[in-house]
Amino acid sequence: MNFYPPLLPGTLIKRYKRFLADVELADGKLVTAHCANTGAMTGCAEPGSAVWLQLSSNLKRKLPYSWQISCTQQGHWIGINTLNANTLVAEGIATKAIIELQGYDKVQREVKFGDDNSRIDFCLTAAHRPDCYVEVKSATFLDNHQGYFPDAKTVRGQRHVRELANIAQQGKRAVLLFLVQHSGIDAVHIAKHIDEVYHHALLQGMAAGVEVLAYSTKISPEKILINQSIPTIV
Image 1 (tube, rainbow, N blue to C red):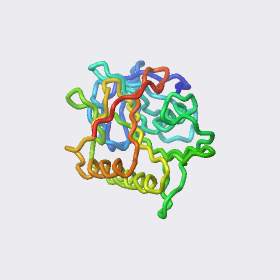
Image 2: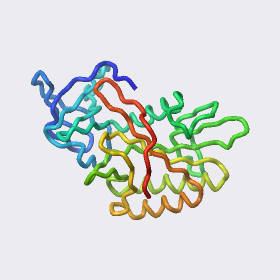
Image 3: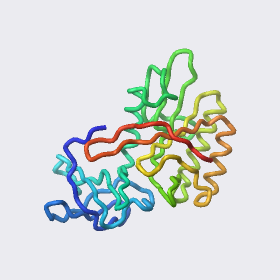
């Protein structure tokens, strides 16, 4: 995923109200950027971090700048915009970079399923193969040199795991894919100490046939690319 138009460098002043971030651009201009990340962003929003913003050409946007990536004072690159995770996975499927999801003819996004008309990120189909449903989660929480998901209690995440388990029990493929947008994370640990219910739901889901994958990314101010498979530790 290439960034266009090119990103603008700056320094983070603060992130607040979840969706807002004050940034000083390289030319000294102070701007408020949109932060497309609903998570706690623990360790990802430290004041003084180097950040890169994208300026929208849409003049009607209330906040024309979007916060895309950061580089921490420890030298870790982080993809801040969680909306990019699905774009990166779509590219990874198309380029066959995600080995476990190769061999499908058709890829649909935001597909309805289940009795509650829930939506799942991807549905992959091919003749003579079970349909494959994929839910993507962006992982950026690094603590004591280890990567974790989730970084806060997630009722929504718990529901997604249960929905994937239902899919697996119907004889279809159900895949939970952690897309790691943090250069300091080389394995994803499921954070039982943060959300024990999520951990238990995932164990039940895996017992029902849910597949769990994790892929790292290469991040720079020019682009983010799917990198390689990394371990998931439940």
